[in-house]
Length: 523
Ligand code: ANZ
Image (cartoon, rainbow, N blue to C red; front, side):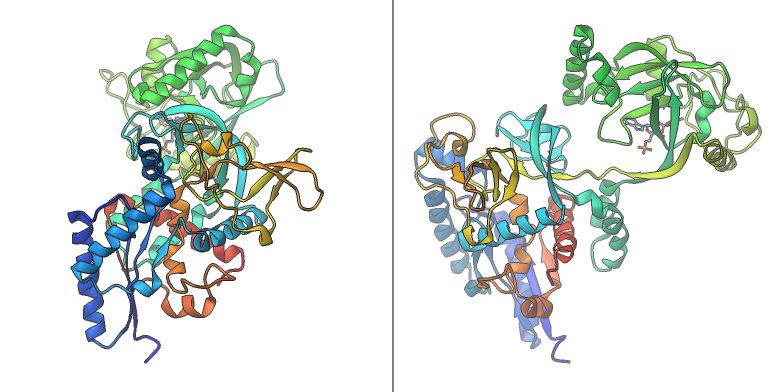
């Protein structure tokens, strides 16, 4: 079958840092061997190479050596290309692409606009991971053990208005489709599985005493409800609005955010007593105090929990510190242990109609009860969050958005693409040079003639590397990012070679892109 006799072997493309090093050589030799093997077996082989050429080092070089990022990058590419050629790798240089060239990023800007029109990219205010060395925002995937993936320094929390890709829209699909990736390494699939992080649980409403409002908590152990002794909220929970003028709360909040940055909230838990209470939804006349605490995170579940100190270590430490009630709900519990995990084999106690049931049964029973009483429902949550793609940097793909003076946020017209970076840029100031360039950001709306300002944030370079494998199939396509005839012939990539450090980052983002592009009508 002639159709089947194709083989697409792809290596993760390099950042043009200056020199080919042994890591590149090792990686690219593998691809070379595979490509030659399939060629020798009469396959039609695609083995391309390109450059992931936007990004910070070029900008830092510009600041240090007074050379433009574009020139610096071009010089590096030409040197590294000559090195790769000397090695004699069987690469198809006729398909070379470079993400910082306008003939690449013009299409990327079109893709951004398509995503925008489909609601797959949106802007919101949020606390972001701020890398104080690189002076930019990082996505969750780019924070490793609390540190920036590139700089290695501890990231801080900062509130900014940012562009986000709606990756969580595809949580279910991204998780379920892992099953279809038969040839992917198990390890990579497991890492993606954990990152997407499906958890099964319930949302339960707690009515605030003397108020019509409720607090909706997320729990994976609804059967422990009779052991609840307090409510804990993230300082970013809506209820914090009530305390926005309290100096005491404000300093507590600062403290929490600082502790969350440092990641040592596991040992050091702090609480702010709101003096408010909720009613226990199943125990008459039982009130539980509401606290804010640093160990409840805003970006998981509802940012609100009920604390069950006898069976959750974090809740236990908190309850001990603030002298809250600790009620065991496990029968024959070893009295020596202050708290213990709740296991499948445990039988419930101190839990009214759940008494005597094993945990699995108890869970079923309480889920039925909360549904009947309309105090909650069974639900699932994903850990995966939307991907923040705004970067406060110069050397990246400009985001094709304008802010009109009347407050409208609009995409740029297609016929104005590409929005290019200015050539005459001063790198001596601090912050984003696009922001303080004297003319670049000032423009007019082509429809209304009103004044407008361009978006000065640029795209995360992981955006660039989320679709390059499609571009390689038709690298010179001028009207479209890639053409259907060629992608349907060459895709999928038959063999992909790269480092395990991209198991979540790059490989999850590209899986999102193929789904988002499909949604926009690309084939
Ligand atoms: C009551 C309970 C009792 C819980 C118990 C655990 C043990 P996983 O399994 O990782 O998904 N939780 C929910 N939202 C949270 C947040 N935003 N920040 C911190 N903790 C949060 O974790 C789910 C459990 O973590 C939930 O179940 C909730 O505490 C807590 F014996 O509810 B549990």
